Picture (tube, rainbow, N blue to C red):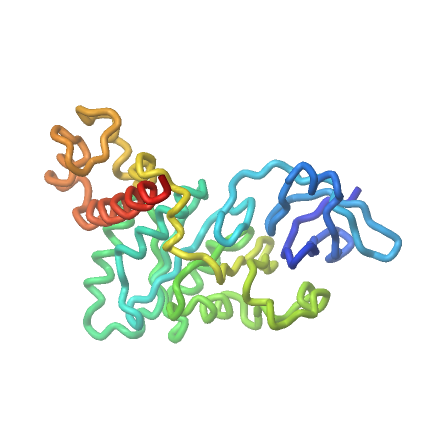
Length: 294
C-alpha cells in the first residue's frame, strides 16, 4: 500500500502525492457505500495499479475539517483582508473568524494586505490590529506591492499546511504569488493530469511549498454560518469564554437577559464593543434562519 496526501479532488478522481509521485486515483467501492468522503488534505492509503493509477483503500482520521470549501488536516488558516480597496470591515473579519473557530483550526492568522494604499491612515489599521492581537490572534500587516511584511509571513507558513481565505479584491492571489513566485492554480503536475483548465479555480488545491502546503480557497464564504447553532455561537468568540458560565441564566443568549456576564464585560471594556456588535448581528441572523427552517 502507498501512503499519500490528497492534493485535489476533481469529480470522482483524486490526485494524491505519494513517494512515487502524483497518482490519479479513485475511491474503493466499499468506501463509497460506507459514505466515507475523501477531500483535499486527507491522508490516505492506496493500491497502485499496473497502469499507474490507484485505488484509495483507506482514509486516516482527520484532525480538523474546513467545511467550505472542504479541506482536511489544516495547520492554520490565513484570513486575508485589504486595508483599502475594499475598505476593511471588522464585521466581515469576525464572520471569517467564527467560521475558522467553528472548523477547529488550531492557528488562525489575520493578514491585512494593501498597506501601501494607506495615506496617513495607518493608525486606524494599527489600532484594529492591536485589538485582535489582544484577543489572541496573530496579525500580519503586509503589502505585496512594496514587499513589506511578506518575509515574516513567508517564514510563518513554511512547513505547515496553510489555507488562504478572503473575499474577492483583497489581493489573495497576489499574496500567494508573492510568497512563492510562479505559483498558480492552473499550472503544475496536478493540473497536467486533470487537463480541465476551465474548472481549476473552483475547488481547493494543495500547492507544495517549503515543506508544507499553501491552499487557496476560492469558495470560502463568510456568509456560510448555517451550520452553527445560535446557542453555540458565543463559544466561537474566544474572549467571551471566561464569562459564559457566569451568566445568571443558563443557557443565555447574551442579548436581552439580565445579569449577563458577557454584557457586563462589554460595559467594563473587557470585551470590545465592536466584537459584541458582530456577535449580536450573527446571532440574530442565525436565530432567524433556524426559525425559518422549522
